[in-house]
Image (tube, rainbow, N blue to C red; front, side):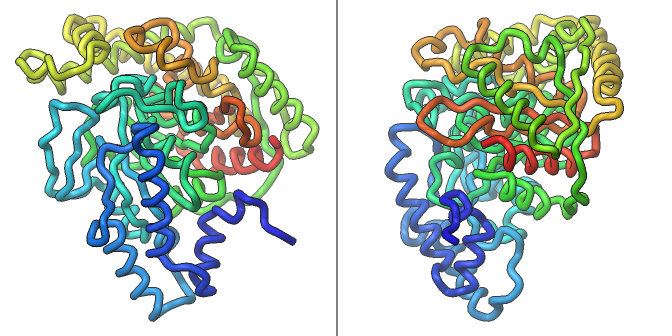
Length: 449
């Protein structure tokens, strides 16, 4: 039986081809570098690419091929798999711009923890991906060298801040893993808008050492992949976790707030997916009432983010270097500078209450299901100059509270790939139950077709 197209592009299929001698790491890496060269200018998804015959990518691929000759039986979990790295994440000896001219000359001497883990698992870095400047934006329009363009429709936003990473995964020719950071939705939003899988694990499960901070108490690292199988494999490769035994999933559908304000396409895809779950026999689907206080918790998340970000970047904000920053980023940072400590302390108290509210929502459930974003990707022309307006609210509404609470949250494509604009399903679980969230996501991806 012929494999499905996506199956042929999986990490498992790539490793099978390696072991059978049908391909090499160098061939796969060369293929992806050539692919990047074709779309790079159109989508602005990369800041740095490690191309060239003697570049990092091909040099490492050749070393791995030499290792493969001696052992074709047991490969590290990400052996030879191309890796793209968000450019706020350190790779020693290579520029890390944080998406900003203010850091254009910064070259870290050491790797971030997550890069070390991914390299140890066998991956091959291809380049550093573009992001909304300083990771403070959900649109991807204020990236280095201009907006990052959506992988499906280049006239539309990629989402952010990890837009370049999501685009690199959607446009890849085969198996690939990418990193992102997520302070309010920066992995899950671009995953949804570009039709890939994006996972933000529980708070502090992935180390943020060696990553430019935005909000130290809210920052999470995350991963992107083409499929749930590849995403789960990548997560397990760097955490050592193992899949859970299969069983029927108990999932809750919020009755308000998280399902309010959906646009027509998001609503259609979401309810179609929920109907598919109910008919599959793999899910116990329940309605879950939502408390009225969610809006106040969202405002608390914004206070914590902007205050902590302004502390870290205060030296730049109070110097001539502020002129190098995009207007929307400066406006948000200045709001943080103006916030008093009483407001910050009140936000920390609301954070505790939000955690309690989420625990009540998830009681007796494996996960909550909701749209990742309430709208499809807007046109770039409708966003530039309005990055901090109402569309920002619609992008962040369903994702930001799970940074405030540290809950694991995953975005899975809401329907099969096609020419129409992607939408996402968000799966949210209890703290520490990351494998349960992945298990729900894997079942979702097999049911929602």
